[in-house]
Amino acid sequence: MSWLGAHVAGLLAGAIAVAYHPVTVDIDRLVVDPSAHRQGIGRALVQDVVRRAEGRMIEVSTGRDNAPARRLYESLGFRTTRDVEVLAGLWVTRYAHCP
Image (cartoon, rainbow, N blue to C red; front, side, top):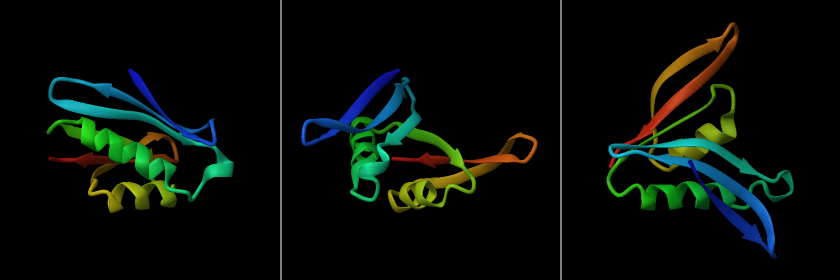
């Protein structure tokens, strides 16, 4: 697992955890400091992963009801692969970004 960070004014404003595999790349976590929301930090981090993927498919999951995250991934070309109920009443949407 690798972490990439985004800094604003010398402070960590966001980070993304990524696992690079031979055929795929998995985004495990994307976090942005609440004070830095809506400033393009999450978008820049995901775009950096897309650039580093070197032609590999990228996979990520997010809460089905997490509209801001879903808009972000969809706006960057990720496509829904399926919805999964991981616990009773807790749904996640899985996405893939194909080169």
